[in-house]
Length: 270
DNA sequence: AACCCGCGCAACCGCGAAGGA
DNA sequence: ATCCTTCGCGGTTGCGCGGGT
Image (tube, rainbow, N blue to C red; front, side, top):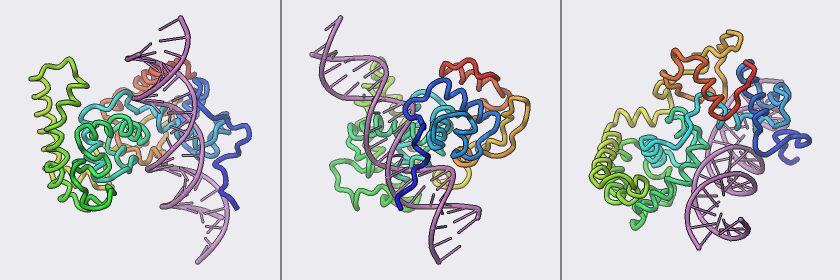
């Protein structure tokens, strides 16, 4: 018996989501919370498979998502985390508030990977390209302890970064002066150094437990009618770790309306 | 102005894990 | 213990857009 499709393909729409579909999904999520992804499309009146709904919600519609390019700090964190975790995008994403695994994965493949190559660093092993890796090109084999990473990072990728980053930085910040670039490089290096040498921070980062500012969906008053939905949203919601306090506390619906306007849907009926 | 090409990102696909019956 | 269902993850695809020629 072959694998069952995630949904019956008949009458299931694929491709880009329309504003109307987004509106339906958002309305449903806000009023009902997440129940069962498989049943959701029918309940929400969508001709989509549950999987598609889940992806659309977690990667695009979730109200707490940050939009726009990753900041330099975020990018650096992604690189550091990738050096330790490999392509565990969801784990990496869980350390970055408001970022999705898909977003980070895309950013890695389109930006960071190229940058690292340009800087002479193998994006897979995080070793200098001209140096034979110690073992097979499996990032998970790089090291098994935080100590190894801490001691390894500055010697390899990060020192190399200092030497070679000028090119990349210049390309991105062409309007900056040389002095600005140097100070920015120093600053970056300093930040990286801080990260790499802070064992406590690393042990925290690598832990699979709590994450910075972790707050669950239960912290949010979500109801259109004032209902407090106390159930944590399982799946993506459960793993989703961080609501920036300044975006939640005291803002309630404002941020949600802002976000609605962000992608051009102004009438959600709430 | 038209065409081409590369890039970036949203979305899809398939597999494995987890959990319930 | 086994089977089945559901979910989540990582890899991949394909489309739209912008820049270059």
